[in-house]
Image (cartoon, rainbow, N blue to C red; front, top):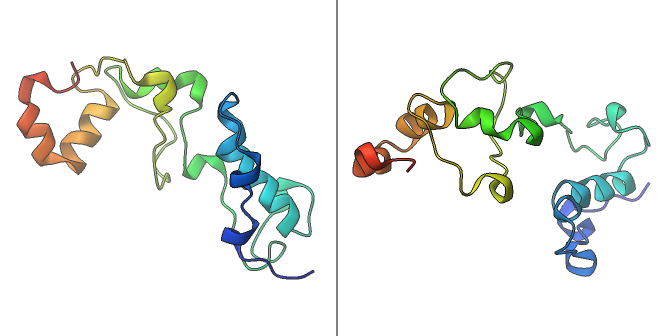
Length: 126
């Protein structure tokens, strides 16, 4: 199998669909990986089967499924997110959501963006 740089394999420029939300992000990467990887089963994708590219599961990048997106903004704890590298907040679905005090998002902002959090004070999330 010929090695293809990931950036060259990305076909968003030619297949962009503004009307289908998932088509351009996860869908684009998945289509590229189907071309790059020897295995057709995404559960078997690894550096050994995908030209040296290590493939991680969604729990590392969006540990909260889009159907539970409000869990980020309600007071409480998130479960099973300890190993996540990032948190995808499903902006198209959550952009008008009020952020409750002591919600996971509130705590992440306080920890990771302390200057902005302090600047907004009591108005943060409203």
